[in-house]
Image (tube, rainbow, N blue to C red):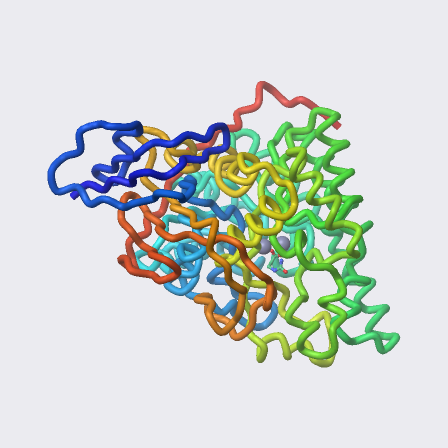
Length: 467
Ligand code: URP
Ligand code: ZN
Ligand code: ZN
């Protein structure tokens, strides 16, 4: 049976218009007014509502063995939370540790998601070691439709790569036409600073930020960019958090380095004072790169408006209160991460579009379209067009609510955004034409999500040596 979404205002990254949308066989078959609708078509009245393309979260962790524990969500819980918040596709980081086999890890992540996710998904493949088997394994993974890599310059001896491994990964990525995403912090400096602070008895969560100061992230960003320039690879900095790192990224772009920038929800709304709260309240707000000095928030918002920040992800990474307490004696042992997969769209709409002067089309671009383009999902995802997957968010801008752990769907016992007001939420969310959410309630098919296979798209015309 087809579905007609009638009477809403369609908003994409480029345009805004009143039109009806007909969905047949999982895709959009017609957009317009006053066209004939096949008998038996279900009608959704979207009068007074905005209709956005399904939102895409380019940076999530669901299955994640990390810091002596596992992130809390399953694909069932995280995907429902994503959908209720308007995210219809996420890209999860496959993160086997350095001691694990990459291909085995890839298959584990695929099995965890397959048949369990209610929304569509793709993967970034983390390269956490580069040895004699890596090239063949990565070729196989790319062939399977995972056309983006992830490297960590941080987390020495666990996920982190050496400069030599970064060079080899980027050289291979360049020849395969694959984009490489990177966590940019200098691992050596972080380790040394952690030891110094702990030796001085500075053990609480308020010392997490001083152990990985802005300069440490700026150095990582700058080094990643230099390696991109010398290998001709295309890169994407994940969760950029501060002005010095942004400056390093922009300087590299000006030199001609092919570099894109993501910032994540916590860095737009929370500052380091949250991690300075006493005890476990502070620990709940420990992530890396850390929440920063307040002055950075305005810089990130301005950069987002200007398009210097391409995308907004979440870095969704839920550890509950008991897990956070693993670091009660030493901040370096607090599992890093803040959940947000359910809250990104509503919070960015409220504090960006409604209250912060963020252009509505830039909002759609940064939270959906740009990620689709950068990661090879476009135009199947990330827009509203005939032939695209019918992933749609009918958005109620009149809704008023508050973010709270007591009402969230992510599998965690706290919210990093507890008490934040929201002005707007999805009233209907479809995934490939099937209604999965109505007014904050999951009403769909739990295991409906599919892995979206992507093709490489970054073939260099010879190495550019952009610096
Ligand atoms: O603190 C964070 N960001 N946790 C998840 C792992 C990562 O670095 O992305
Ligand atoms: Zn990271
Ligand atoms: Zn992450």
